Length: 205
Image 1 (cartoon, one colour):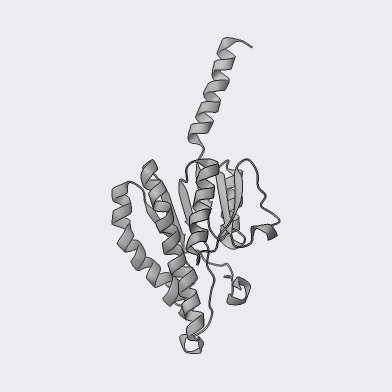
Image 2: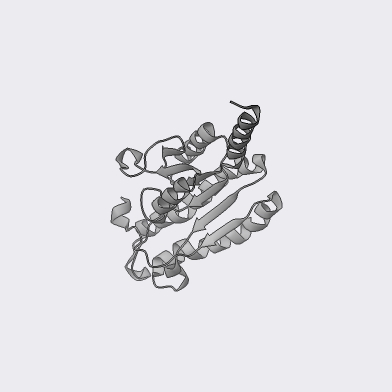
């Protein structure tokens, strides 16, 4: 093989290695989480697809650029392990997409205390703890993006309990964190998608 051809191949390999990014996606078993995992994998990214039951996943498969990890966002040890597994395989995590969550549809009056507490554990504290777990790695690599998926239903107050639990606390949390993250050199994003049926409380169980 001519020297110039070999040099070009090496340069392409190096460029590909340097440019390849890694995304960790929570709630990757369904909805926007799964759609995001498929999209990023098709675009050539390294994907850490995190979900509560990876052994049941049929579409996403472990491969060179996709890693299935077990994650329960209400379990701190599970969160820590999912981040460690992703870093062990891909070395960096450039983007975190907080997609895990479920909708509690109905008026506030009809929701019991246990239901509301579970909503906070998953949709608020789970997102906060996941973000907290990823920040040290992003600080070390001096780069990163965190995308938090909320709901247009929350913005419009169509889903009373979901609005209270997911949308409003998330906005306050982001306002608190946004200055800190920008000072570290990476942004926080909030996306309010619409026209997709949320995962119900029964499906989450």
